Length: 394
Ligand code: PLP
Image (tube, rainbow, N blue to C red; front, side):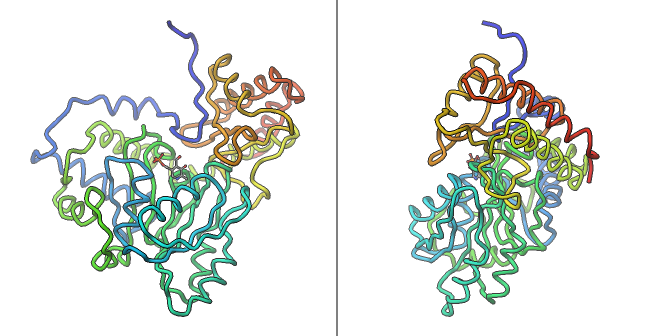
């Protein structure tokens, strides 16, 4: 049956796909081994490096998702039994650790409170103590999507340098790349894991992996078993503009258009827009509704997703399901430890003030319908006040 009015999609990925990008993906299939095909591939592989802020590294694009790029980063650079250092403060940092363990690496885990992020000082302490350099890689989640927490990767690099430790730095940027400032070369990140369905404003289906020269060298001695995600195979075929297997042609056209859209708005303007929009959402949550964010302090606030704690005794699952059924609004669920305690508003990708007003108004209506004591209109008023009193770009 036809449902009038659009769905308001505010999960933190997949994000909304701009019409221009949607249209660019309506293409006939074509021969991915034709003489013309490299024009498409080579342009994309060169252009995408700007988004990673790398000139020295190489970016790989797989028909896959972010999870696959975790695996590719680990297996291309490490050998079975290698020790890695990682911190856990949410479902995604947890899942990467779980994968590393299941792939046979020894993970030294720093558990920190959910709502905080990468504990840079602890990493430094542990790395300083590791005189024998047993730790081969350091893992960090730049933006923990489950709790709405962003960590300082530049500070982590400085800590690794201060400890004078040679470990590789592997970073998850699935929900930050293109939306929150990330500098692969400057921070000497060795593997940058990402995916298409968030900041790139595309459907899921492409995994992106930025790889430094140091990580490419590590491949030569890394003995982990790998096949589909072997970067060596990709390197060989990408060099002539092809893929080792059949790529998703519509997604590649979509990615080409996405990179044009990003270039037109400008990466720095996109970061500033995300900060500005996120500030309006945070004003709605804290000043309007009088609720708390899962992120414990402003230094952890994420500009791409806010995880909002419902009051004690209320059930966030009901708020989310009612918002969907009654108002056709998709909010992000609380995952694992915070299930039922939070709902999430994704503010990532193709958004402006008024699109976010839909999410704020809908979340507020759903909370009121569920007996949560917030003042009607208070979220919208607080966001409106914030946006109207601040310039759009920094
Ligand atoms: N890492 C983070 C921070 C994520 O938010 C996600 C997905 O939401 C993933 C990894 C997994 O990516 P994918 O679902 O594309 O496999």
